[in-house]
Length: 178
Image (tube, rainbow, N blue to C red):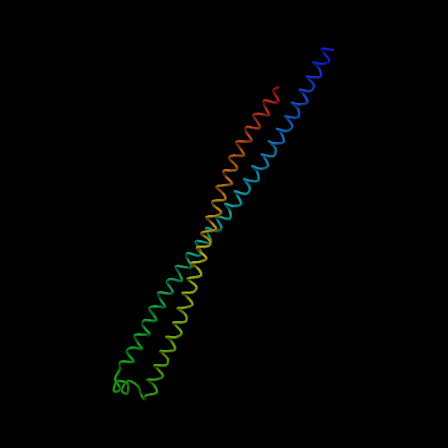
């Protein structure tokens, strides 16, 4: 009887230990899968961050190019305004001597005014483009920052999962030794 009772206790203990071992092994397997998933997510996020960096660089270059176009347009616009001012300041005698007739003067003045209007329109379009590019760059910077924070969180989760996995593996080894 004593040996049967002891045998039943030992068998119960072995069953309990086997169950604990299986539970711990399942936890370790689950943690391994979680770590793999986090590693994949981190790699994926880093690829997206790299792509965003390229987009930000391209947008910055476009902003620089657009800014240069704005400055060039301003310079051309200033030249046109100076020419209009010079034409406006000519006396009637200068106008008559410089042109074959009065309609030539007005034709030149209308042409300068049309050119001025066209340049103003182009300048406005370029300024609008620059504004849009600035907004796009700001948006990309924000998205990149969000992704970088996500990668930091995922990295911390991975470190925590690694730590928990090692603790579970240690418990599993102790259970196996019993």
